[in-house]
Image (cartoon, rainbow, N blue to C red; front, side):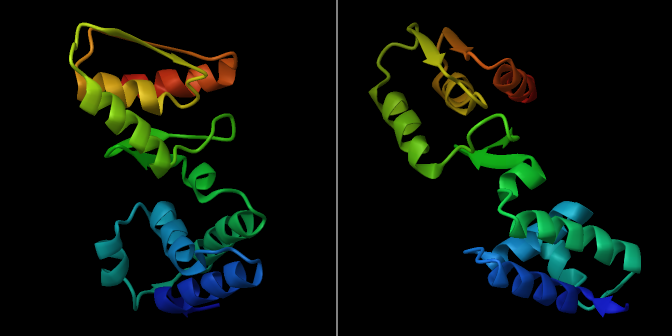
Length: 160
């Protein structure tokens, strides 16, 4: 099977649309970028490339996982939050934009950076880490009942 990247992405998009994935066009491209380590510019630069069969197989496996409702972020292992990239997996909730509002509110209300903060049920650690990075607080503590979630949060803390 010889397909150009453009054709491959279109097939992936169609499969995702048929599975009822809301952002099928975006997800089809994101999955390929993830697979190849491309950004959107590199994707467009390779738009007419003819792909090898093994590349097509790996891509269609990713599309199938997404079509079965595995969240894109769980496939790629990444989600942006407050301008920072966070590792996520099936053990934590995916950080959402509306939660950024909470972090922004805390940062706006910050009058005393000497305050200590506690983040209960931290999950990926995105709130605690974002506040630590952007707020300059003396102490930010994050905890969770889930050991698996704490592993994710620790990985993110080390990254930032």
